[in-house]
Image (tube, rainbow, N blue to C red):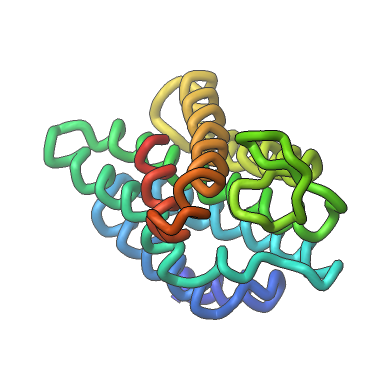
Length: 212
């Protein structure tokens, strides 16, 4: 009941699309059942940070709705779920939980950067060539969006590292750096592979989270 109340509150306060909230709630419950308890709170924190980013971007009437399709979250979170399951199997549940947090950090960074960048940036640049393009273009980054993604990842990393089992600095650096690295990989794949039709958005999300 508490999980349901929390995610209903996220929906009401941030207006994340209902399918996206439901997907996060289901995955959070799965994480709670198969992994150390604190991993559940990482899923909750990720949903909350992303929801706040969605709320801020909605004030401008602009947001990247593709980021909130359930299949996008499922593909992006799949590497984290695999890590959660593999950790206990190999006798390293804490390591699996840390890897899962790194994958979640990519989702936080990518989604917040896209929403804020589209809402508040007038121009963006392709990561491959630096060419100026419209915000929201596959593979494009903006100064405002990138900064927002970095800050969102930092908030998520602080909370995840605080409730983690390893040293705070160690966990923070791993989650923070891999989250932003995964976001950069996502943009690069979007500008090189996705625009050519070799990968779709869901597959790019899966690869970038896996690399992180």
